[in-house]
Length: 179
Ligand SMILES: Cc1cc2nc3c(=O)[nH]c(=O)nc-3n(C[C@H](O)[C@H](O)[C@H](O)COP(=O)(O)O)c2cc1C
Image 1 (tube, rainbow, N blue to C red):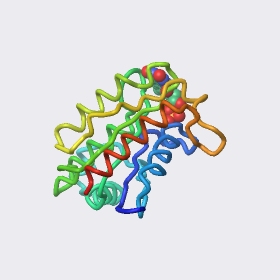
Image 2 (image 1 turned 60 degrees about the vertical axis):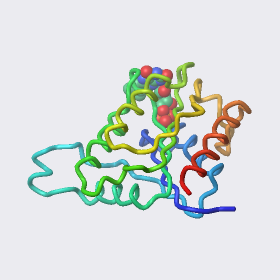
Image 3 (image 1 turned 90 degrees about the vertical axis):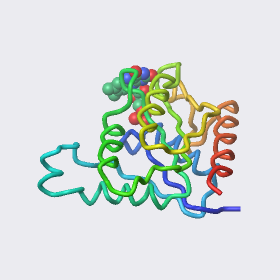
Image 4 (image 1 turned 120 degrees about the vertical axis):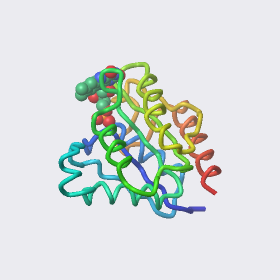
């Protein structure tokens, strides 16, 4: 039965992003009562901007969405073996908001990449980058979708049963962690 509020964060801004597709597949499997997609079109973190204007409204909205969610999923691309700047920028901005929105939040991470390794390195880096905020990051199963342009059908559904099974298990665990 659908329940709870799930926040989805894609570390790629492209509308056709495979990480966005993976995030939406995860949300379908989680089956939340409400699914909210974060918008990472934020200004670049700039201490002068923060000093002059405070926390931008777009950043505060994201922090509020994280705080209000029962669980969060993050699907990040691998850029040169690391995190996308878009995702790291969002983490840095949110760290400047009050209230510690990540604290104890159940979080599941995943990645879709063109390379065969499926973003294993970026996923470890994302785990490290989230750790200072002390969320409850699920340890696994790891969802690493390599060769991503071949792994989704026209409706955005995963075509590989192994990936589908791993994501489904991850979402079942996330649901359990969010009650
Ligand atoms: C700047 C840049 C760096 C990339 N570095 C990697 C990489 O290290 N490993 C990899 O597997 N793919 C890499 N790619 C390819 C991405 O995995 C591919 O473009 C993927 O589709 C991006 O995710 P998206 O579809 O969600 O936008 C890179 C792409 C870009 C634009």
